[in-house]
Image 1 (cartoon, helix red, strand yellow):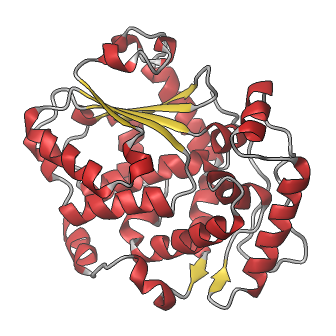
Image 2: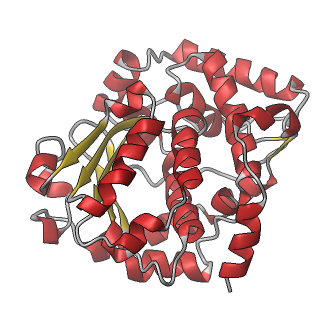
Length: 324
């Protein structure tokens, strides 16, 4: 499992009197040190210089009002963009704008919220399985577990993002990237109709351009005929690099060519207990609750970046009607 160390108190002051260096510069394993050097081009000097440059840029930015400037937050973007600082700056602008544009997806990531707590404790539809032998964080999504008569797309979107944010500051995840297994067995038309076309497009845009995540592979398994149209839409919205990382499989046997079996839950022939995974996830979310809520205090003037996404307030109105 990825490291669960918790950073100290954080701030969103864009130019603090003291910057928080909560990254010790030492990836947790020899494997991740090798990945950082070979895949990211990361060096100690380059890491220090990148942090200094990004902090100067944020401090002088005319539109960023509040933003985390601690090491682990900024290294999310530097590592996700392979230390291309121009790309990292653009990703930070997109990330901050995204959070304010799609507030219902990305704000109030409260682990103690009634719906979020149920999705973790009872539904167990998304399980972080741990780090595989290639150094990648592997997560399993079981589509059938989500009751779409109770949870709508905004519940599910916010839940998924809460889990991602809980791991974004993990050095091993930043360096090794992530693998998603999406099991669509027994999924219904309701599951595939849950997300609007605009939702799918905006989520893919966010993954590709705003979220500080290195997507290594996405494995979609047991996709029924009713879901193939959605699968084709995902591919049409994804850029070439992401499309090359998305794989469709008829059975889990195809997935096992890419993913360590032992990481999978017992029902898939692996060794992981869903109960143990859930307990570890609850502990992580509790430890990171303050950080998750602090994200809502970051602020950017969105007007100059309106061209990033064409979004209306329709979703806000609809969401307010559906959540009790």
